[in-house]
Image (cartoon, rainbow, N blue to C red; front, side):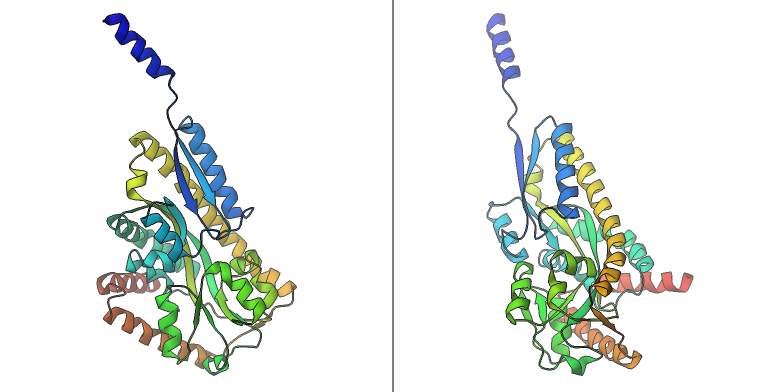
Length: 329
């Protein structure tokens, strides 16, 4: 009997542990800094777990929009994805808080609010069945078009793009009596090339990475909203990993998203200068026009609060933190 048990244990010791593969989709094109950092983190995870955990990435939007990716996660075709703030909000509505128009004036304000509110959003996502390893910013979004946009009236007759499922942008434009056209990120470049759309709101670094800057001529030099995103993994899939391996994944992916966040911040300021050098003309809207935009965005926010697309308690918490920070400065 002893010899039999010893043979069984020896056989088990020789049997390789089957790797658990996490399939992750993203709109980020392959070869970009984002994908380089994610692949680097995945390699470190594979090494530290002795091959027990590996990642398979589907970059460049091949798995479709955020909506499609989330559906594929729900049915088990994917385990997770890099999802924009608007996509995160379809899982946990208060993920929209950072995307509210004209909410932040500086990156210092962003950093302070995120230090307080990131844990709230991470917890909200987890309660909905998703594990996230942190967020990375996309920078401030600016309106870009083929004609100068000084005010709301200049948008008349234009075909304005918004991200698919983005309730915040939809409500803001509809408050200005403009009907925006929702499209997945992967379809925006084609939409600009074919004339399906002619106006976008995007960060400078995102505009360059996705080649949208080749299809527009003007940038309205007033930050519209803050953009961010993060990687979500179905909690049930993540919990199939051993606890020590979960810790390794959290550590390596957490560090990766911190690096991506920091690099995006540096790249975004440089990207503004790049847009100028390639011929994009910057126009500054008059202060009264900016005030009109803010008034419309406030009306849109109230509509979102009344329809439960935002939680009043967390919205008011963020406003108080922001007011206290500004007063202290």
